[in-house]
Image 1 (spheres, rainbow, N blue to C red):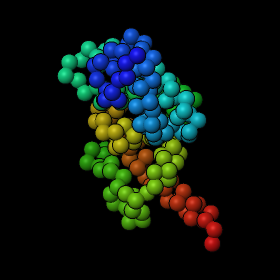
Image 2: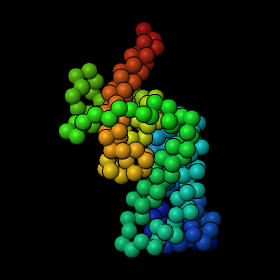
Image 3: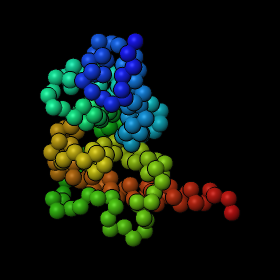
Length: 200
C-alpha cells in the first residue's frame, strides 16, 4: 500500500479518484485543519462549520477529475477555490437564514476602501486574537459575512463575488461596507464583554 506525499500532486489526486483509501485519508488529513478554519469564518457557529466542512470535502472529491485535467494547474489553489465555492452554495441554500437582511440599498461606493484594518482609532485590529475575530465574523448576517470573506479575506474580485452570490456588484459593495462597520462594532462589543468577564 503506497504512502503518498502530503504535497498535492497529480499522483495523489489520481489515487483519490481511484478511491484509494490511503490517498483519500492523507488528502483529508492534509486539508482538514485549513478547511475547518475557512468553514468557521464562513459559518454562523461551530456546529454549522462542522457540517459544511464535511459536505465541502465531498464536493471537492467529486471535482478532482476536473481539477486533475487542468494542465499546469496550481492544484492547491483549485482545491481551495472549489471548497470555498461549495461553502458559499451550502450557506446560500439555507434560504431562511441567507435572505434575512440580505436586501441592502446600493450606494455609489466605487471609491470606497473596504479594508477592515484602516481608519480605526479605537482598535489595533492586527493584534486581535483569532477567536475574537472569528466570533465577530460569525455574528454578521450571512449576506455580509459571505461578501466580506470572499472579497476582503480571500481576495476574490467584486465581479466574481457578485456572480457567486447572485447579487449585483453595487449591492455586494454595500454589503462589504456594512460588514466592515458591523465587524468593527462586533469586535469592540466582544472585547468589552471579554474584559468585563475577567477576574479583578
